[in-house]
Length: 389
Image 1 (cartoon, rainbow, N blue to C red):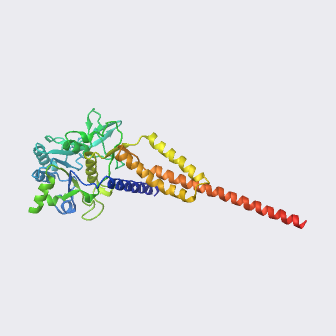
Image 2 (cartoon, rainbow, N blue to C red):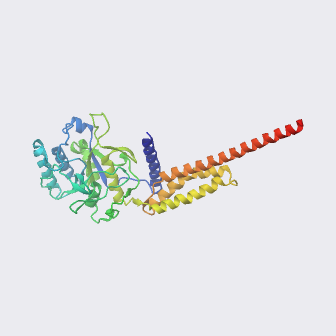
Image 3 (cartoon, one colour):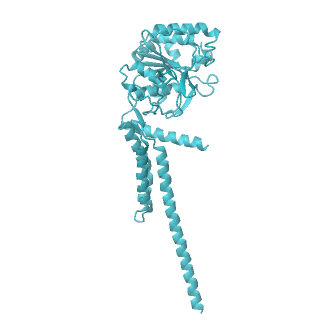
């Protein structure tokens, strides 16, 4: 329970920080990414038939339909891994025809539009390796690939990894950005040294332009015009948002607890894409800088709470001012210096130290008071004895 409370408090602090910071820089909005989601009706009541693995024949039809609207990138956020990681079984025979259809469409469309597919990543001792996917035996034309595994901390943008054979493999969001931004400027954050990079303020679900698969496939005249306007030249990420157990039952597929509440992982990929393209990313602040801030504020706090000349009101103001102080440091470092500073730990330490110092002062005062009271009582008794004599 303590761990859950700690994580929730940390997420709340981060959410407050990012909302405050985003308002100072102007409202965030979705610049380049459109989400096309398979929702409950399509997955449980439609042709997808609640099936796992996902029906690649239906995905092929969807890619063909999206091709008509001329997006710049189409990316598919689905798990296409083979039944066995070593590829001894690449795919089951009953799915072979739909896999061939999928590969044929991908090959055709990728000659006009950049297509990004997920690649399964594995770990072999000290090295990363790619594992078998159901499309491995097919000709996918000019398709691009990126791994969809995520860090435990969803504030960190997944970066490229070095494979055992010496090649580098982009993350899924990186592969999308690389396909969209041919200059490569948006990927300069990746130093290829394993150091983490934090995304900027996140967008909530309803801040993204999104359509259901049904709206794309069974569009009316007005929806068709809207799709033509919204999709042309943009990034389209196809992902899942159906409920896990049955229609309207259970959490949505692949849900994660993120800085913008609980959302399917496809929204995380979309947020990372936007962060990279808008260059709203930050590297962690160097450890010695963070320690210097903490030591400096610790000395100030010690002076304030141990000085008898400073009134209680100033001490109380210091305690309240710690939270906006660390949030301000985090904002300035992220937005102006390109460094990420997590305000949670120093805020907690600073508040704890402030409370400890004040309680220590109270205890000292109480000890002095008891000693004074004891001395007074002793003096009274001595006086009584003297008078009696």
